[in-house]
Length: 406
Image (cartoon, rainbow, N blue to C red; front, side, top):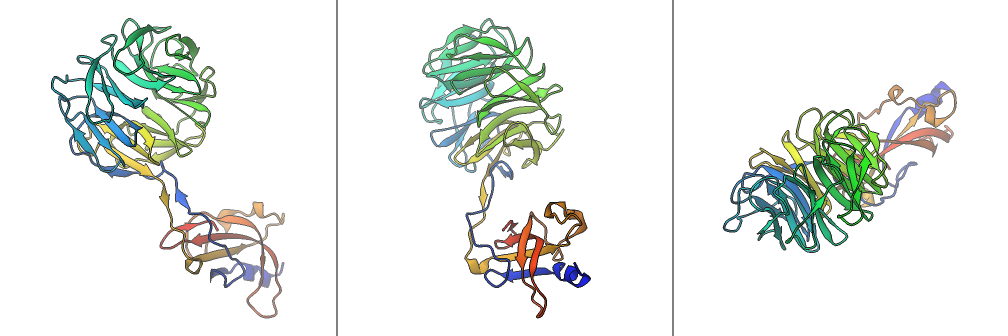
């Protein structure tokens, strides 16, 4: 290739759609998926929020103290309403809340009753737990609510309706911290004890399983055919399983205390209460995780997905105890508003576009963003200069400062 041709290929061409050789037609909206960008929200009352769930078109969050306004609800994760509890409501340290079979159920670690239920998330009725244990987590599946605890004689309780509860003996006296139901199976994890995983098909008969490591497992979820557990301490802070029985250790991006994890919009998202990392991490498969900045440096302890968005809650955060993340969609503009930036790259000696070294060739316009590399046909703008094929990369501007691949 001549020096003149290399110089020609080095030019940056900025052209309107339809006016040049490199043309891209508008396609579907580009989106920043939920879980990647977070915004701080406020609650109408201060609360040491411990857990959040989604059901019946609304988010419900519960706090760990106070005799009133221990519950807030929202249909969008932005606007929240506080709910005063009924007369006689105890000072319960609420730890978990779930929605199932048209009923919200919350369980607590201290106080009288330690269970509450609601059909709408606003009006709650105090119930009596099977035992006065430190109930840490509750889930719903196979027509039954199941809760697990850190201590007590039985450490499991079940209910068909969230009202009347029956004690069930755990196979091991571990400190059980989280339970979920998916793929026909209840799975629970523990922060201490032997094995640290147990499974059940009905919530009553349980089998001990071996965790990937003796980490302090704190949270559990299921998505995309995979169970994912996260830990607040230990060498391994993530483990995954395709069946709830056999577990594999995974590497978290930081040694943070990952206290809650959920799945939605094709993404696992976990939150942390400490600053060892970015306090949020995401993964499409539960195996490879990416740190993501939180909306603020709060003690994020709970997360849920619903209504096309993630909502996380924090304790000891005052009014700033909620953050929300939803998919951000760039509007599809009329073709006349689209702009293509295409850049021809110097041909490497191997004559393979995949061998082009990114750092050796910068955008002449100073633009940043992703790019697509490949073989493209080109036609010189100077008369008398022939065309051919070249390695190129392209960006598309969809209005304002938003750039994406063509």
